[in-house]
Image (cartoon, rainbow, N blue to C red; front, side, top):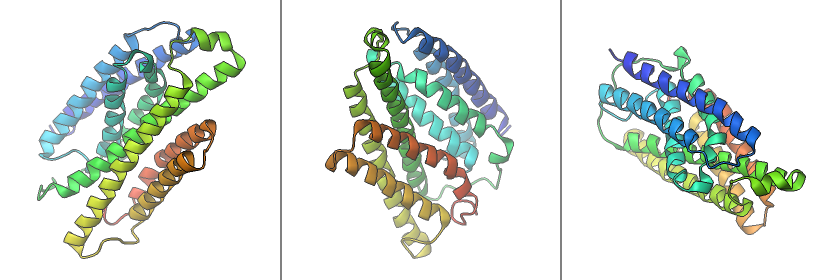
Length: 273
């Protein structure tokens, strides 16, 4: 049955992310002094359920499962956990999971709201450009999300260096200089994915509707997000924006994306016909 098995699998993934979030609290209280692989393993199990849910939904639709807000939200969470599993192969980046777990759990709980999983007619797969456009943009949001997690980890480490140096020295988290580079790299990766996704979307609009841009709320919002990340990255690279402000900018911009992504999708005639 469409929607039953995939939602159950995703619910298991969210429950696993919730368990990892609880375990993350223990790591925070211990000051990240142990190279504990339990968290990585728990998130890997959650990612397996998450991947299964996406595969079941995708096979049932015979296309990339990004056709409503539930599927888009599920995809964003999947990109975050997948990127973490790659980064977590490096010992000192493994604690990113302690900061990513609460985010994944919150995104997952929100995605499970029944009203997000609107079931329209089964979409027809005509060509892959529309799916490529959506997939690249959602990959970008996943990179921005993990970049915000890295920035939060940077701020935590900086705080310990200022107010609890012993805790910072004993912790196994990476140096703040490396976290700054990781944050910047993730934001640049997300920015280029977003740029490519918007370019493909503009080309698709020209092909299907005869124009490159429109005043559609989602398109205007996407342009604002693109400009915001470009400004943040250029300010860091050219104007020497302080690392602390850069970290807060990465977090604040992603929070803006999370709070406005769904609201701007609903009035969009192109994305929510």
